[in-house]
Length: 154
Length: 250
Image (cartoon, rainbow over all chains, first blue to last red):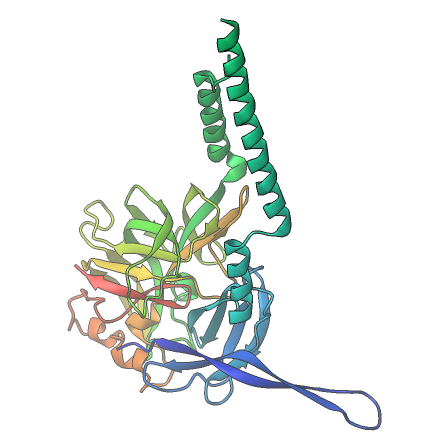
């Protein structure tokens, strides 16, 4: 069977660190969610040192990141959390390649905020609704008042 | 008297909406290309000889293409998973295409076979069939290769063909640039790609690699073992760039 490519992605936590300039060294770390891609041929052979191109949802035609896999065919990155949608990772080597599409969804916190916005009314919306109800009551009263006046005059 | 929406107003609105949707400003163009890469236009030349050491030059390389379609799919179609395509939009070519991957190729090895107006979006999947065509020059074949082979001072003209009918279900193009993203008023393209090294193998690739293990090479044709006919089953010639396709043999 011809060699084909398997890409697998795993959500993972990555530790990022930044070093400051100067004589001393300062390291800051943060644990952030990231994506780990494992690229291998269907023979099980890892795609070592393969070309990687990452495309972000907001500019899908332009590479967001280019890199290479390590000796085990592994590549990992942290997507921009502001860009929700489908991230695409392309891995190529020696005339063979594959594209992996990874949906990056809102975090639970963001999702909760969206749910709150769609299920509850804001203060302005509540005032507008109250005004509409009052205006409807006034209109109904005026309608019956006018009808009664018309009947009395006839 | 209260105003009601006049039927003419509704009709006018509908016509306006229809005109806007069908306006070229809201549609883009999708170009369909096919190619056999440099191995078709330049042949198998050192160091890219066949796996058994033959140099090949193609004068003509005809393919029959039927039921060619490009799709916007969501989730994006993955040929390795094989789940049905979730199609959002589709662009299809109405006619069978008979293409010479050598004689009609541009300098980038590609042949433009159609330009079609397309709804904007990402055409990230394709289906197409390598199909026998009764008309000349295929005369019932789906693929016809005419050329010359040479090795160790021996030169052999050849005419090879297959009558196999194979449908390809492909995901997104894989290559130097991302393809198939149609923007209103602009042009994008999709591509069907034939990998001839899957048929003849490559001397500059590992002999024990799966591609060379499966490829037929040219010795079998040179000694008339195959009577100049071959089957592409299990060879996986059809790709989208470097991306593999799921194949179905009819």
